Image (tube, rainbow, N blue to C red; front, side, top):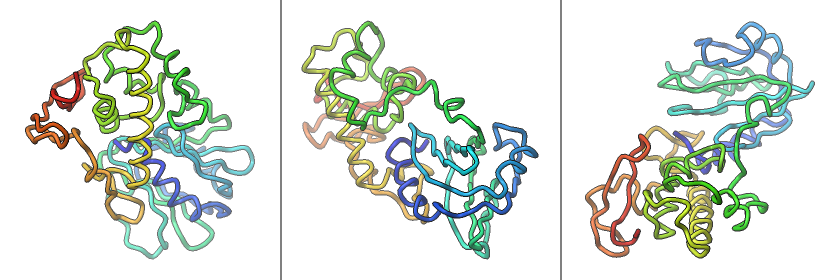
Amino acid sequence: MPELPEVETVVRVIRPQLVGKRIIATRLQWARHIDRPDPLEFQSRITGLTFLDVYRRAKFLVFPLDQGETLIIHLRMSGHLTVVDRAFPQDKHTHTVFELNTKQELRFRDTRKFGRVYLVKDPQEVLENLGPEPLDLSFTVEVFQQLISGRKRALKPFLLDQSVIAGIGNIYADEALFHAGLLPTRRTDTLAPGEVAALHRGIQDVLLLGIAREGASISTYVKPDGEMGEMQNEVKVFRRTGENCYRCDHTIERINLGGRSTHYCPGCQK
């Protein structure tokens, strides 16, 4: 699933391609992509609206439109967004298409069909249960300590909880814990202040690196132009099971934690 850096990369690419352009029609080739409202109402309400902005909230792409409407898209496991000329051949897995007034289209390709599309008056209807953004200036070590205080959870599931911190997924949780030198099974209530600060720094460092490398093309993710990101060349533990740690030469191990594959170095993370 695309995580914060991958979704942020998509936003940065398609924002200048969309802002100021008007939707003249939509093609819903798999109606279940539309979470709300019903597909007929969706097409009726969105036709004629203009893109005012594009931004990210957690793993959601948010598109403010005129007339008080907001389009929200969640890519889920295999979703891919791109803006192309209308004459460009359409992939068979493209299920939702927004025709623009510039002879272009915003296309949502989704091989596994897990993605979701929303059209709402109030974005909080979809986004209200998300935790703070880990790269916001307001996300300080003190705020992170407050989120941890009173919880008794293993660190990996804690980092994946979108109601606690927004946007972190499997890749960046494993990498942040490696950077902080903390085992993924370590409980939140056992962390010393210095370890909290190290994990806070690790989260921000790996997310910023992921954005700088334009995401990790480890499974289905590619950039809107179809090119691969480069973060997969920077990972230290994620999906490196059986390989040697770059730092200490121990063998990277994999466990299942909270139903998720989890990778760590037993030499560096204690």
